[in-house]
Image (cartoon, rainbow, N blue to C red; front, top):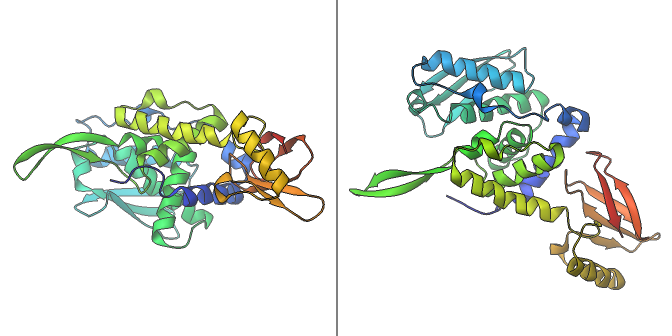
Length: 292
């Protein structure tokens, strides 16, 4: 299982693409996350009726009232799959293990319903891998992805006649990347889902993602940047250059400008180099206090 942030560039591109396609007003409609009690799946509930019920929860959350889900189970390599058609009826298949282990049915259906949502939007990235990362990122940022991160856990398993701990998760993002997207969402909407995690590993991954998301809010030329970062920025400003790791870049054309990624949607923002200024991202409408 991968850890860290190997897909970070694609995750950030996915956030930009999501804001561009939906608009800030539409994204704000998803300020409330799917609540844990709405996807609870007791062991005595019929697996087909229960899966249909949870699928309806996801359809309602993502505001797809004219779509219908038919959910079945079979043995397969992946956790789930969906047949993308013109609708309004979509056929979803979940791995047969979900008939008895219901803990992650909500997570699997959140991912598959998001495929339908993005299909209807006509939003995709080139390549299967990047498109799956877009799907996981959108699921997390629009309020259902905490379920995907909560599927990350360690459980005992027998391998070569030995009892070992085996890690398990759903989706294409690493646990820390899920945490990063969920943390960015929490910073935007004040939606703290950490108390809902049943997995201690998921909680740790969320906190690791939160560290990175908060760091992005303290990068120059943002006013919240720390002393050392501000000093490095001042040196780069005098030289007119910056390393790629810095994030910001200076443009030599008059009037002199600096560009940097919005810490919310990662669209590049360009502002004149002229001291303290309040900047409003035109894409996500985040207000940023800067010292350029």
